[in-house]
Image (cartoon, rainbow over all chains, first blue to last red; front, side, top):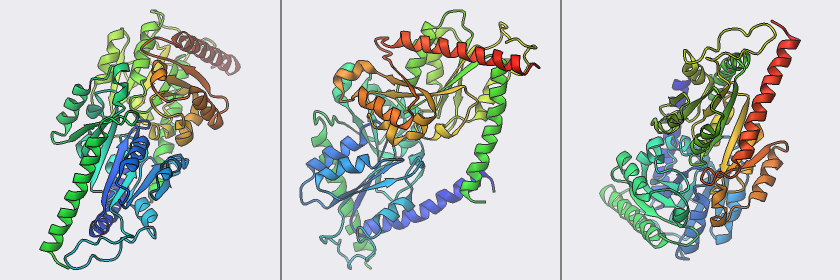
Length: 244
Length: 244
């Protein structure tokens, strides 16, 4: 069996697990987002500021992936939400099996939803934030059962990143253009970055943020709230159409 | 055959080609460097400023890798040195076969060296700069037949990158800490980054640069000159010890 065949098998096995995960997360009414970006794009800082601003009653949790160290989990645990580190030990991406293994026994995603209603129990999860390994390439191919991928690009990188790494921009529902506080000090042209992102993916949504100044966070938190609302409505619709 | 076995086979095939490449480059007296860093670390800008400052008589060439686009080659071609783009079409790293295929017919690396002397002909190459795909993880595993890996880290990333991506810091002879002009505007502590890099690789050399202000370039160009001199001396020594 050659490498391409093996890679296809690995991906199809990943897709099988991701599909199960998506069903479980959906039946639990959980919105799950997969954050992908280069090392240093500011994914962890974005999640820190997000946890700080979430309404306190939100049942949120974070899975954060890294090749080595528990640094990100330690940073994220300060905000009072459950956080688990996935240390990949050299692997350049998260896969669905890692997500399944780390959710197992942590949240109850296995029980079927009650007939015709979205479950809303205290031990269930409304929002699962997954921080992928810092890498704009490999995580793109691995479905984690998430509702949406969010690509994080920093203005300290180049405006041509959407053209050079088209896969992730094509697959992401949202691009967070981060570190906009640095704009006066770098040659980055946000308009060109937007244009490049839309050349690759015309429907991509774009929000500019700074984790230092808080710029853009009102818009981002509204997006998150609306996306969670949309997910709930979809689940309600599915349950109404296909009652269990 | 499982995935691990296949990966080992791919890497050992890569190592075989890399070993041949290293022999050819060495017998031609070429110093070759493999630049690895995140997307946006400033690898292309570093090479642009380097080509600008090379003594005009230097016989240098650049191979630049990207998943898509020829943008980097277009940027680098302005400096009067031969440049070839390697577009990997989705692959997250360069491998030795890509280098071999792109050097083939471009420079004559096949002729054996003359007995006891380092060749120094006009159509031979003194310096080969290889810009890898923007990725701190996967390019680490692929030997390209280079003399040294150089990791490029930007101060817009985090100081903990050496701990989170230890492989590349362990394998690099030099760390370029780039974009130091941004230091007044970011929370990055260079001392901590140096300390982290040396925890992973105590002998790593470190040079701080800014491609905007030119800071650190005198030191970097001296490093490059000394490294090329050291390579020539090694080749002379090998030829003296094992005359052909």
